[in-house]
Length: 240
Image (cartoon, rainbow, N blue to C red; front, side):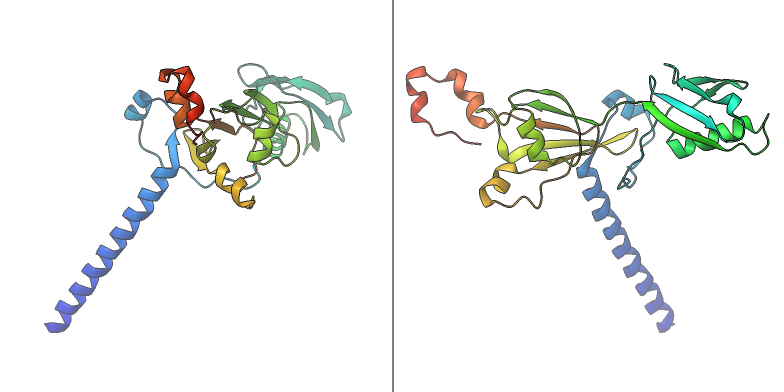
């Protein structure tokens, strides 16, 4: 009897510890991510947690992209196609096939499957010709807000410099970096650029991914400046 009671107590303790650990993990993950959909959509849609982000995500086809298709053994089917606004392409001898949101390896498999209807084990190669260039968006209190090409390895501080640097009204300590994690989720991270620059340590300066958006909010002083007499503005120290 005593052994049975001890076993039940052990199970209860393990269950309680597991529940607390799960609650702690869930609370941390929710703080780091926000849904990309509107509040009304989020309320009606089932709750889904964001998955792990791919370290080196492959480019996926979008409407307007163009690519060449080459057949090693059947060159008469070589062609250049453009992804239509609905995500389809029209293939010679096959017809319409949906290819939007596919990577090049996935596209190669899709076309091999499609052409297997009329060719025996086709060998196909794909070369992208025209596609959306990698980019980032800078917004808020920067010199030149807008969309910029992302060429090579670019960090957050480098992107801010490319966008004209901080304005006097910028809050350096709370720069927001938004990054899409999935179709439903976008992560939001606060970067203390003021601290990094003050300490001369850029080890925590994140490398941007294509599609990232950085937002620089206004500092506290800029919010109350319009309400101050112009003669007394010079007596206040700038804060961030």
